[in-house]
Length: 143
Image 1: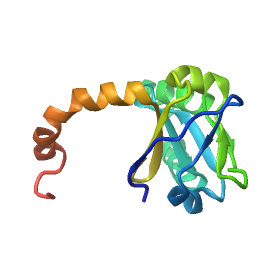
Image 2: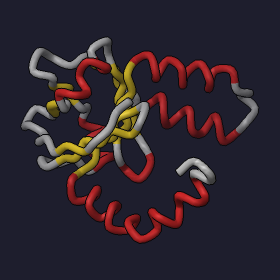
Image 3: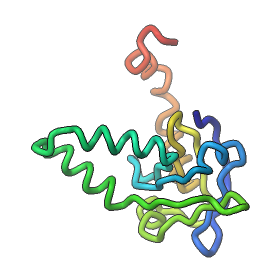
Image 4: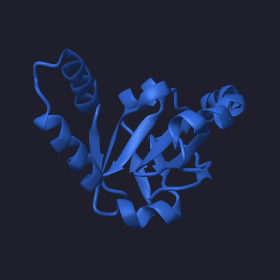
């Protein structure tokens, strides 16, 4: 499980240092792909494989599935962190997420999200007020 928020910097070569607490779960390889709201998703290889299997067994006749799968898989890149815990984010994914130097890396349960720091702050500010209200809809009877 990935938890917490961290603020690494993107270097001139498009590399980002993963938080130390995330590295063990990602050491077997990872996949970076487009996420919603213009962030990037980083999945451990095992989780990406699980998602892939779910999509593989879904009917190809479902247009929404085809559309989602095309974007999801065509933008995906696999990687393995180097000894310093750095991953290289491909240029098209950096452009999609608007990543410059200042980034935010968030734990999001079974995945990691990478955001441009300003975009994350704007998103967070827009969600703060509705957060309490959403718990009743998203987590009824859980919290």
